[in-house]
Length: 79
Length: 147
Image 1 (cartoon, rainbow over the protein chains, first blue to last red):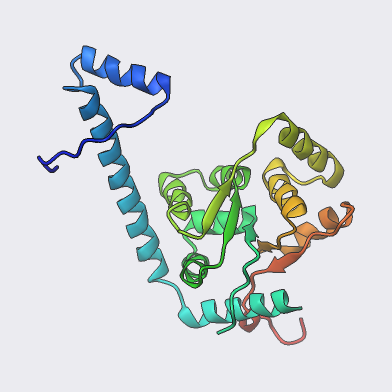
Image 2: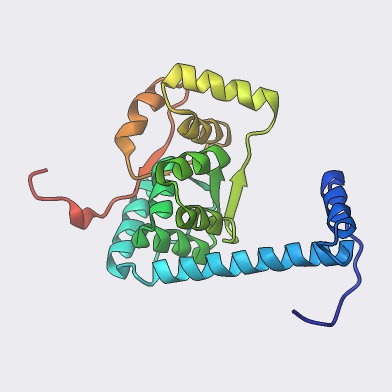
């Protein structure tokens, strides 16, 4: 995680704000900013993992078969 | 390669189930549409139906990965009026709620439905005032002579 921080103003749902404050009060986050930073880092990780999974799956595809299926769809759309 | 249609294509539950199952050819096909800039609409309830079919973390990750494609818009079920319209479609067509959401969006937006199972849609389409436009994903190379 980067030590450099960017300042931004965000608007969040009140229940999520309350939960972030609860994390701070219970010692599970050092600040509300840290709680949201961690949540966004987790989302970035999940998104990267999902993109990698899609890439890995599509690399197993049969390009000729995919091309035939797309041509078949195009034919139907053109009718 | 042909010019892509700018009319959005709607994916039904059969296509989303194939994605969730990790069908490499269907995933590559959707990625190719993303590369072409072809708008795709995915009804939220169809995602629920596919997730229910597969039941697994990887399947849900593959479904969630659809949202990361630029061309994909996930259509929510929004408000009491849309919910009632969905119930009406279920009662009228016999479709399950997952594909009834697909039909509801296709009916309103006048967009084609992409499916792996066109036969499933024949009755439903006939039960509606305006027939749905059904486009089947199939490899003509799979068709056996005489069939």
